[in-house]
Amino acid sequence: MRWQTASKSEYALLKANARENRNHMTDAERIFWEVAKQSKLGQKCRRQYIIGTYIVDFIFLDSKLIIEIDGGYHLDEQQHKNDELRQQSLELLGYKVIRFKNEQVLSDIDGIINKVKSNLIY
Image (cartoon, rainbow, N blue to C red):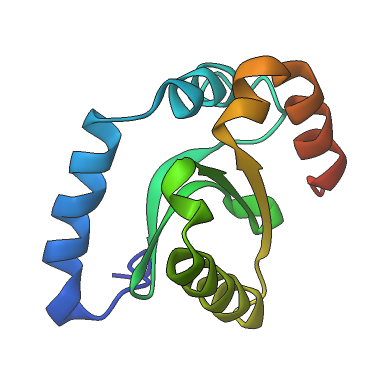
């Protein structure tokens, strides 16, 4: 199928993990999704989207813009290195990745929305 971006052998596991992530969003992810899901940003947004072996938090496919909302565990040194490698891989595929911390979303959703809008391609 043309919309699948993962290998066939990994897709079922990734899909199950994405479904689990959608069912257990953080407060920050939930707040962002409430704005993004209603196309208030001018483009359709998808959540927990599979690209290759990765599941991204949010993606605006028309703009190839990925939004990652990071919790505290992303401060771990090894996780930070993994995040950098992941981001480089996604960028090599032509995506732009913007990362926000949970605290940023919870305290300044309007600023987050403005930054996202300024990176969307219309």
